[in-house]
View 1 (cartoon, rainbow, N blue to C red):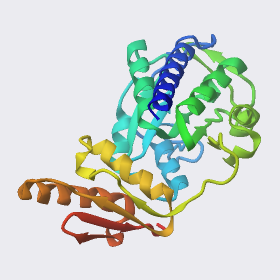
View 2: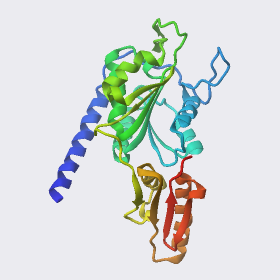
View 3: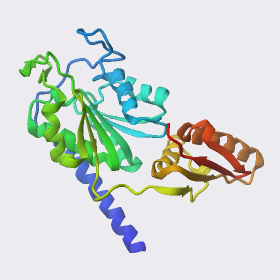
View 4: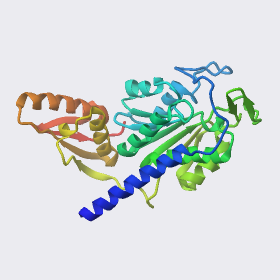
Amino acid sequence: MKTVKNILFIFSVLFSLSLQIFAENLPEQTAWSRPNVRGYSFDSKTNKIDDTESLGALDSISTIFGKNAFGLWVFENGGGGHDDNRNHLKNKFGANALVYDRFMRPSEHNKQVIETALKKSVDSCTSMSVLNVIDTRESRLAHIKLCYDVLTESGVAYFKVWPGDESKIPQTMEGGYQSNQNANFYLDEVKEIFGNDNVILHDEKTIKATKKTVEGEKKLVASCSSMSPINFIASPDDQLHHIRRCYEALKEDGFAYFKIASDNSDVQEQDIAHAMSSVKNVFGADNVVLQDAITIRAVKKKS
């Protein structure tokens, strides 16, 4: 068993190093240096919120989830040079964002983000109006491949595409490039990385891709038990992610059990209150009960 663990550790280190090398040696493309959209932007034609960039794009993705995003780890590939999106995901949806940007973030920051992503088991990757500003096929495939590599098994990537003036005539401008294409133009490239059966055109601006390296449907379980006391997980973000892992593994009406452990009754009471709040955030307040003094029971119900 120890030998197997050592082999897996060596493999994970080698994969991490290879991904770092890949990310640091991406193919050439027209560099993007124009200011990032911040907050909500509006479509000049419809005067509605633009759902391909910044906060509008994140809000539209949340409707695709079909459930809350508490505890999710999200890798924002091309997420810009500011933390507005990261803060929005955390404050509005309870999700944790790792922001990577080839041109808008320092290389040391990007390196750290990739290292963290490989440790956290990323649930979702977002690419918001990025494919349409990459002018070479090779660079687009590298961008898509990075999304694929950081995702955990069954993780989902969302590629939003801003269609520009919809002329389908590429434009090179000061500080960037714009393809003026819709999402369908990039569908085959995403399929090339994720596989034909794992990619759909969700709408004219959105491609949804699922990472599947194991054949067959993901098998859901009827029960999930946390092997270690949940209050032993120090980081609140990691605790939420742990709870969410149980949630995602369960069938509808399946049960999850989370233990609390402490020799100090005052500390235990505080830990129970915090853990109850975290479990309710993921499972829903009406679906969580304190079964006994040290056990939280939760049931998975449709949102």
